[in-house]
Amino acid sequence: MGKGHLKKFKSRETQSKNGIKLHSTITPNFQFMKPLFDIRCDCSEYCLERCDSSTKEIFASTIHKLGQMTWQQIDVAPKNGLGYEKIPIAQIKPVSPISVSPEEKVKVFRLTDKARMGGVRVDGRTLSILWVTSEHDLY
Image 1 (spheres, rainbow, N blue to C red):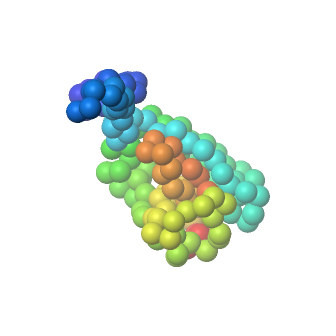
Image 2 (cartoon, helix red, strand yellow):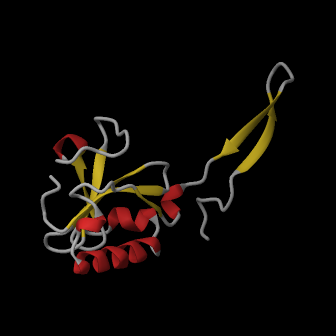
């Protein structure tokens, strides 16, 4: 692994002015890590279960390919490849199955000319996939 990121969380002990020992945690730089995926689609019309078999295959292949990349590589990938476009949550048609702030931008990945996968990055490393559709009707 290269410089700029850590393999594990490290805790270090420091001492404040009044002599109390404090612990601080160094957070890793998630940009240099491979993503984790959390599929949160409910069984609405934007669920993987409702997609045709070719979209399901492409979804699995895309998740596999994205899982081999770092977030830094995904962020600079072209949107017509393995990259994404950011769409404001207010422009997304279905309601989010998780609580998402109104300022949040959804990462929408293109699976085919029509099929889309949309989600939000929840903890720096994890992409929570909220919607998958065979049609270009997410936004």
